[in-house]
Length: 350
Image (tube, rainbow, N blue to C red):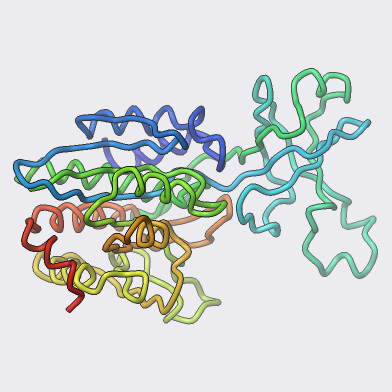
C-alpha cells in the first residue's frame, strides 16, 4: 500500500486513549501482514514479532496508536452533552467541530457554545473554556439516554486532506504517522538480511501517561528500543530552533533520554545512505514513549526519531509523507547494519 493509503486506512480507526482494543482493528490487520506473529498484550498494545537470520538480541520499534479525544460527563435535560478531555486537546479548535459519540451506536454531533452576539464584552477576546462548550446531537434527552451514557468516548469526525507537494492533513497523525513508519520499516526490511528479532509495537495510552510503552517494554525487554513520534513542524510563529522542516527528513534526538551510541549510529547510517535528517536536541524528558522505554526494568538503550508535524493536537495536523518513508527506511537500514557485537557494545556508553 502507498503511505497515503496506509494513513487513510488507520485514521478511520477511532482510537482515543483507553479504547484502543476495540478501535484498532485495521492497525492489527496491517501488522499481521508485516510480522510473523501478532498479539495484543494485557494493556492492549499490539505487538508484532519478526525473526531475523541469526542472533538472539531484540530490537523494539514503538509508536503510539492512541489519539486525543473526549468523554461524556453529563447529559443535560434539554439534550445537550457536556464533556471532558482525554489527552491534551487544544481547546481553541473545539467550537464548531463535528464529533462522533461512541455510545450503544455511534451518534454524530457538533460542538457549540454561546454565539458572539450574546457574549459579554470580556468573553469575546478569550478562548472558550471546557465548561462553556456542549455537544448538540439533535436528539431529545429521553432518546439520548437510551443510546449514550456518561463515560462514553467522543472522537473527531474528520476526513484526511491531501495537500500539495506530498503534504497530508488529518486528525490523529500524532502518532498514527509513527505506526505507518513502523509498517514502512518492515516493508523495507524485506530487502535485507538482518539479525536478531524485531518487535513492532503500536502502544496504547501514550497521550495520558506513556503507559503502553511501559508494559510492552517490560514484557519484551529489548536490547534496543526505538520510539517513533512526531515533532513540531515549522510555522511562522515559532523559532527555527524549536521546529523541524517538513519534507527534510526525520529528526534524530540526542540528550539524556537517548543512548549516545544509538544516536551516532543512526546519524552515520543517514549520512552513508544519503537520507536527509534533522537534529533534535532534548536536554531532559522527551515526553514520548522513549522515556518509558529507557527506564523500564534495568534500563534499555533507547533512540527517538520524530516526524515533523504542524498543528499538533488539532484536527488538521499536517506532515509530509516523504518524512514517514524516510523514517521507515532509516530504521530498516539501522536494523540491517547491527549485530551482536554492536549490541554488546551498548553496555559501555563510550
